[in-house]
Image 1: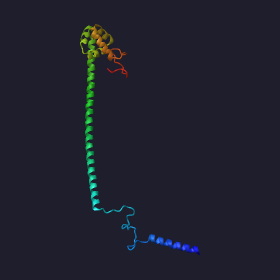
Image 2 (image 1 turned 90 degrees about the vertical axis):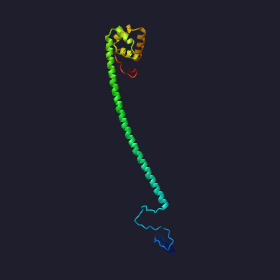
Image 3 (image 1 turned 135 degrees about the vertical axis):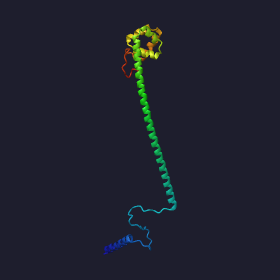
Image 4 (image 1 turned 30 degrees about the vertical axis):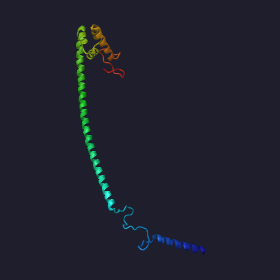
Length: 196
């Protein structure tokens, strides 16, 4: 019987606690649970009314953000215009570079053709007369002409040339030509050989 009374008291105590936990809030009681006016919120954030100072500060920050976004957009537009200007300028420079390269190629071809004619002319001349003309030429032109000549013709011209001048031109030729290349022939391009 004693255990029945214990179960009865515990049951009344539990019913009382459940009643307190689930009772509706009343205006008379000291209930500290907040009242939710809008039952449809169900977990969404409810709008909080702002104080005038907080509202003004928020508007000021929004204006600053809008001004900053405008400055960023203007800067991006300026960069896009500058990028386009640079791209156009690079295209112009590439065209000029291509034109210069084309002119250099044409100029080299013309110079090579002139040098071939000049070499052919000096090879057909009497070696003594050719030696006299080549002997007074500027060193670079004389070396170009002599290097393009056939070996026999070169030897006959250097043979009748003034010894000091022949020695200077021979040393300039040997400085330009690799040792394994015969005169009148173009050297084969290797990594070790200097370009003419």
